[in-house]
Length: 624
Ligand SMILES: [Zn+2]
Ligand SMILES: [Zn+2]
Ligand SMILES: [Zn+2]
Ligand SMILES: [Zn+2]
Ligand SMILES: [Zn+2]
Image 1 (cartoon, helix red, strand yellow):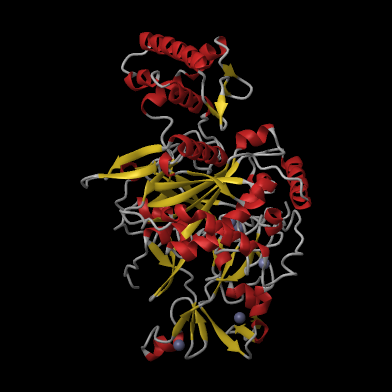
Image 2: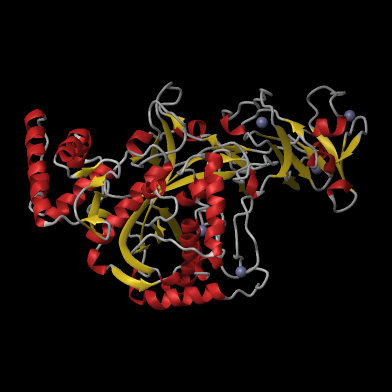
């Protein structure tokens, strides 16, 4: 058996491989072993490689929150041969341990081909095709260990390809296995120790199906990408979080706080607090008294930075409101909301460079930076909406793989998600109980364009109303505003998502990046959505990252200056599609949430769209 290594880029490993994936190597297909068996039993200690992420939606109620670690560049992740059944194309013999005729002739393995098929169930189990079951049915006429069968191709179709028993001559076409359902063996080959035999507990009530080992739906990785935003739980902000109730109480008492809206009761401009001199003075007094109180009770905190804030009432009000609005994420949507709020703040106030030391190397890495003087306002957008375009000079993302699904068979789930999530985290040291679970990640640096509007979106056109109707139905079914299978039906989401795709397609032409390397993030203000379902602020972030130390080229942010002409081009792209009138007349519904959109006008590659190219509709932008 070959012990050769195959080099894989970290990003490819996280995005496409991971535990339970089958990799093709010159020595045949191999399965990537679990995080525990494949990695942690080697030299890797995730504690030394931890990377901060706001929230991982793995275990719904973990006692110890899960964590992510950066895969080191020179790491070896172990694999083992899978599937082991092969076909000798000289003798047409299907075998698990070498073709008997070739072995007899003394030239093992010269003309063999790994078998194309495996068996998998939607709960994530994976196994070899059971050739004995296919040929003999439920009986084992020649004992359990029958290590080869004859392969009889009588035509190109599965129904014409037979597997036959060399002992009794019984045979069956492959189509019998391919189109049937089979009892699940409950096997997770990635969890088996190297050298150990297959574990088949047969404790699964799902059905296995035969599937090609290279089929994309055999293993769909579940990854989460986070944008690093300024920390709300570090340094002096940590103190404000700890003392938040006292701060709220003091503000409430001074009638400066609107508890139901969760914001300061002061004069506002563009939705942001902009206290008049009298209000500013009142706020300053309340905050100074609060700091004095904290200082008398808590020692060891450096409050100098916070005291300095009182010199600028607008900055002070902004900081206080950030603290009041911040919620420690308890779902991916809340982590998402924090990202949105930080970027919105960046539009108005900028985000000073957030730096991190570069490990053992000299210098620092800038994780995020937004310069408020580069922000452009009043840019004409679709439907008369006035857009705000803000370049994000530097950004940093962390992408974590938390598991995978085997999308075999069908579950009839309207969200289109087939297969149970198989969690691929592992504890460290291996075998510890109750410890936190670790998930592999990679990081990237890049740049982006953050685009929002000066106002909430609210239209009355029939297309908008139809999406709104679907949104309300979805909300009624789920009851949860933050459920992505609910909010993605919101017309404001469809509006921003469609606009994002139109822009992606023109940006790729002008920025020098390929379309597949630009990603999108679609934001809706969830706080607002909870209060007013009808109209809501939203935004998009179009960004590009690379895992090199220096990030990307600056080609995307350079487009800020000519954004008007790019938007015009994008909107021209929305008006006509070469597939019209078919594309234009495509009707959407709950099970198929895609309106006027097709590959000719709106769809982008799977790597750029995190919403599966659904919830798109050109007409929502045009019928205003
Ligand atoms: Zn042979
Ligand atoms: Zn037989
Ligand atoms: Zn199963
Ligand atoms: Zn089209
Ligand atoms: Zn998309």
